[in-house]
Image 1 (cartoon, rainbow, N blue to C red):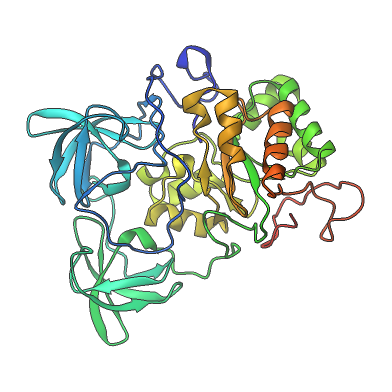
Image 2 (cartoon, rainbow, N blue to C red):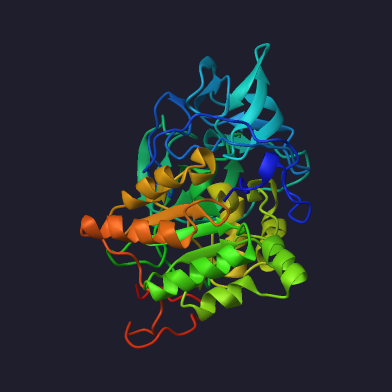
Length: 414
């Protein structure tokens, strides 16, 4: 999800994403599920911890001027939970933004101090006139309807996933006032989409996608460090009967096509590997309207039915964009933080600790994406009685390796 593989922390001009040097940060615990399927109660002071991805300062034209806290939120001296707490910003407070880290944390100012807060518990404050209240929204999970616009209020009922409900108001934290089953109450805007048309994307769990088996899926985002390493890794995966899922950006595909005349997605599919969408230029899609985010997904990147949002950043507008282009969101259930530790041994160890059915996140520009790393990960998992997803041999999993289809099945033949 993060272009961390560039020397001196600078982004290659053809990718055009990062403009600042990498910040060295401490590693944080891992192994937590990134995908949430419904609204949950949260602690009084919130922040993203186990899947924190603070590594490089991102300054972008899409940086919001302000964000609003959706819970009592710790402000820290750096962009992860490894840093000291400066103060706690009350829920519902609007604060000015000056930068964003690659994990989605924001650098903000409040009460005369400047520090970092997790992007998980803030909403983007859009400019006046930039959006209008939707007439209806559709739930993307079984969703509690409450008497007020936060989890502090009493639950009235639970609205089933996929239900379209009428909207009459929106709170400053993004919650919607809706009507359902003869009652009116509030629902979290995180788990609804403003697209009320029936989605064409497969319905699968967000964190594990179409893998419905007990096998582990090794996934790699972004862009390979070299064409030779890419070819060596997909060739080894095929020979070792490993079926990886690759998520290159559109800029990455265009760069390799321009420089070498090759289509990375086609090369991977020819070796029985799966390829999903990862946007064109890796922006945080939450800054965009549904239409603009959909354009990022439908542009020069991979055109298929599954995609991974940059940074794993998801809100109602992002879900709307994926619905609009007919893609299902596939995040991950285990993050190796390979871009942060920059260590082959640690990355291999973290991937090797995967549980049956896990989707493991790594990156093509770092140390997990190599023949030797793949060999070690598969061997280590096997010692624990855990298998990896197999290279594609058709729906029956037998015979010679064949080219994977562009559209992934709703149940991956792992």
